Length: 195
Image (cartoon, rainbow, N blue to C red; front, top):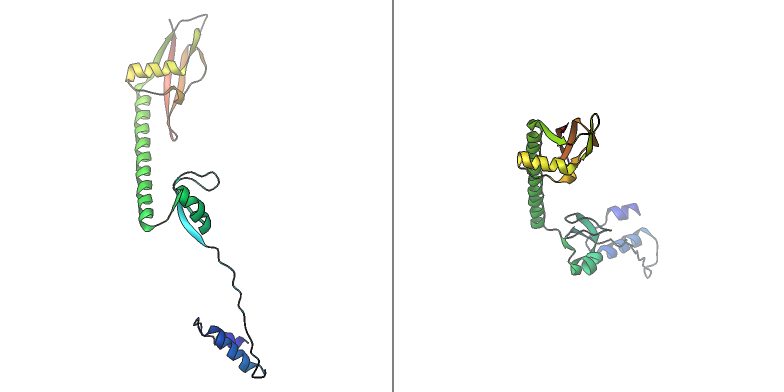
């Protein structure tokens, strides 16, 4: 039986015939009887390489490369316009888009670093408040106060959401942090004086 398998010629038209003849030669069967060999193959799963055009909660994010079943692509993703098949041209465009996005991220980070350098070299921002007993001041210094001071002194627009201040209710020197970028934080000194 092993010699039969090693001597097989894999032409599609004569495959079964040659196997049947060789089995008949190796076995002592009467001439009127033939041996039929049946090969069972597993059905292969047909998949398609696709790129998502929009975010899909159970599948992936926009621009992600995925392997999905051919029927799912053909019957759902393609008619709904949610995906397209990967082509070399599309891969090239995606790579160029990713490079453009990375360059933009680097540029934004560099601008944030330059702005942080400006904030740190200015020195301390002076804040005047009406004084109470000892070092106490009336009210407190808020993030909006710091934003207003920066705008007045440096002519820079800063969102108050990025300002992190300790609780300031006394005179003295404090450090505020400005989160200009996820990777860049500027530390700014505040001097609080009583009138």
